[in-house]
Image (cartoon, rainbow, N blue to C red; front, top):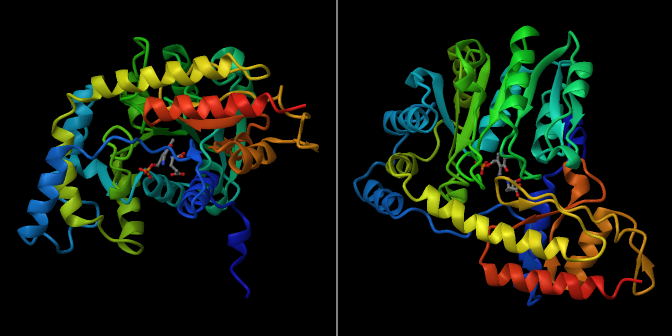
Length: 396
Ligand code: PMP
Ligand code: GLU
């Protein structure tokens, strides 16, 4: 079969692939604790469930405006105003099928062939592939563990060229759990303003921050920054509504309009009754604080366990729900006579022989690392860490 050339330009999502593989193995009777998918175990908020059932029963099941119905757009701009103190018009908002879809639309309407797009590395698996799919060129800037995985500013400056179109920012960060310092965000915003570059700010983990850190969005830094930023958020993480596939973008009207045009020829509106229900969920965010403290408990358990094991070191995440430990101390060792050479092989051996399923760091641009999503019950985390430790003791 001869597929389009563009299909060779990008990779399948490793997070989705590993999570799917573990689910299939467990369905066949294996017992693997999946640390793979970034998916909170909490249930969908009750008001959303009730409102979805009501909307379906009341016949609100027809097409809606391509950019999303008025109810959800009103709820999104009010939510953003409450959370960030920044106001948007509804014409600056588009709702899509998940934040991943919002980001895809942004890349398609903004990037031309040969444009350069700055991605901080380690990065969420999807950014480089979406940039490549648009024909543009990902340019990576390192975030080092000794800087709490904040981007290296000198390197950022050195990588800006006349072809740089945008910088993708993700704080709190998947996979590192970094929450960029205010100074870092300010410096990135200054560069964007001075060099006429767009900022794409993926803030899907905005409500999951620990230890008194506060989420700062570049759009809070003033009109000049807001006018060149596209803010992305969604219902998947803070609201545990991954399967509902609702994400949104807020930004300059011409960019949003272009995204609506693209969406009008690809998916049309997101699911009508689910948008109405999500609008209800967005009104009540009182549970964010208790959720964040529950995630913090889990973080402390997993990071404590990882750092107590020989050959593993893990920077303490300040937000999101991922631990991103370095396993270089385990690479080069033998398991059952076979040398473990890299993170992909290590993740596979752990899935097959330890009953523990992380995602290899190489998928996030960080060989030598593994990513563990800890959005699960503490007993499962503890059992997973016991298995990991027992496996480590069998390495020679
Ligand atoms: N951005 C980041 C950083 C993520 O981790 C995810 C997780 N899926 C997304 C965007 C997309 O989320 P969704 O499409 O489920 O809204
Ligand atoms: N964002 C989550 C993760 O990184 C879900 C999977 C995905 O959307 O790629 O695991």
